[in-house]
Image (cartoon, rainbow, N blue to C red):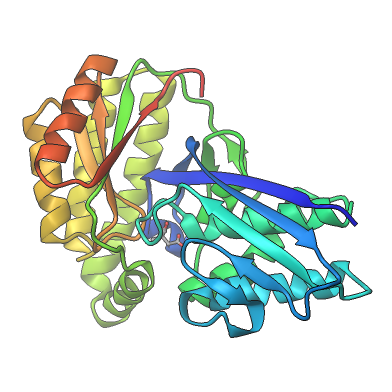
Length: 312
Ligand code: MEV
């Protein structure tokens, strides 16, 4: 048996987070510049499987807390693919910041599954990849829509509706997205639960916000198709107002968004679960994107990435 390698990438949600849990569409983009690589090396000399990563080093059986979902996934893959149950070392090398709304857990799961199937020379369909990724995502996030894993496994931007076949959504705009990490851990699980509670306790207020986010996502798709960058920026600003009303933004994200909009952004919003994590800001040119990134770093963002929107 030889070493097997699997890779995946970060994701951002352009629009539709939270609403996507309630059946509305979302548009999500792979961020290929931010990668995770997993290497599985079977080693009969080991007594028990070992994990090496920036967040946990040690026996698989002792991986608890945040690693619980990943552990469950690895145990299932090992059981399914290796009839001899040969121990292995699994190394995770990730550029993705964890818990920042960039899909770190989903990307890690996708890379692990690909690495295992490569190690044991098994064919892996897209359907099986996403089914297996749901094993760990359900444990980590409770009731995920599946958009994170779908985008971590995708090679194009996606139009995503929960439970429906994935639809590629080609993007060819002159704009750029600046992604800025607030440095605060996002709280996807807590944010998703809170929206669920609001949906139960106050559906009159919550349901229209979810539906409005769905309408904005439809408008974003039209504006992408018609190359209308300014209108797209306005859609992002409106989505942020809905997300604020759903109580999934916070003061740090709001502050970065204000700074972005004062420094040339055409529109900005949080991305992912919220309550920390990252924002995205739309810029009309590479120069504008660079200036925006500098302004966001000066305002306290700990890292920025620039994602071009052409030929995507
Ligand atoms: C998280 O990246 C996106 C959410 O809509 C949750 C989900 O869809 O599973 C907040």
